[in-house]
Image (cartoon, rainbow, N blue to C red):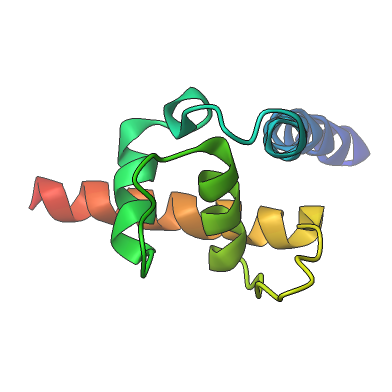
Length: 110
């Protein structure tokens, strides 16, 4: 019984660690290369959904814009003081973005 629980936990940790690395990479690139093209960190479908959800689009889709758009999906509120984006709000946004991607793909199939 405990062996099954341990195996399940190992699989969950493996899955979540991949997502954690992706989120850390997003925050790192947001701080170090904010003007890089957004296509370097997100796939075309993710960008399409973020563009559809964004009230105003920049002329060039950058890493900075993409990370802030994901954070807004997670509840991030931009203030004048420009508080840093936290990993938890980015996590919530990332989950919502992937839910939207899945919904888009399901709607496209029907």
